[in-house]
Amino acid sequence: MDLTVRAGDVVETKKPHPCGGRRWEVVRTGAEYKIRCLTCGRTVVLDHDGLAKRLRRGSGEER
Image (tube, rainbow, N blue to C red):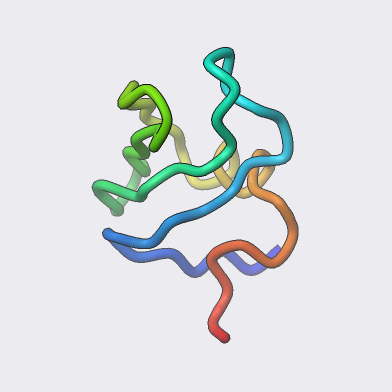
């Protein structure tokens, strides 16, 4: 999967966060990605492969 996301993008994960939310905002990009749950506000830091694995197919791609 070609991962193209920028800060400010909203992405959707395959599995929900424990709070029930699937939508996340990308806060920071670089060697690692920092994303924030739009339901509860929790932030998570993931590497490139970890984020690509968790995203729903099609999220974050150029449209």
